[in-house]
Length: 264
Image (cartoon, one colour):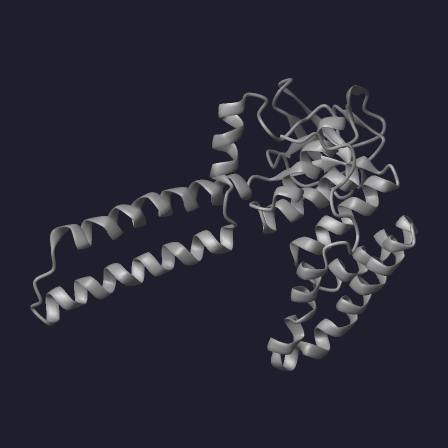
């Protein structure tokens, strides 16, 4: 793999993908007005990034995201802007959101791994074979995988209908092949869904002091550096302003202010 020394394709340097994104309102009917402001913020973010105004770019991308523009390129460009302003924790969180929306995009994977590695928490396995299987597992997005499973299910229903109601002889292999594909792809989708619904967060504070209780009066037992992944626990009753987190690799858990962690 080519070594990545800085985020790939920052800001608006991917005109093809951005042109595709800007066509969204043309097919959105009445929702075009609703998307106008987020798209305008996205364009302003690209312009600011091109001028080297990375703080302004991040602000515009955040506006586009918060106003409902849910697209991997918004998150990806936001991650690039945060990376350029040395806010590595927020960059990792944005790259993770981009990855969840488009897990097969190589630039997203490379930038996510770069930023996460700075925090000592690389995403890609180090071994070549493990890295290959990891990329294969996330080769297509969840939406594409869900659509494929749906189409396979409809195909099986159609074949069953022909057999039951039309009394048409259907070769066994014509049924077994889509059935096997459906079984494998649905298992793949279920595993991906389980992995994506895990309540994880990214530390966005410079250092998160993890305390033994949800109050500053409790002692800080350990710290977690910026950009690290943590598991958001729900073992205790929610406490306003605080999150209970776990660090599985070290077998530790405790409480941090909710402003210290971006929950994905």
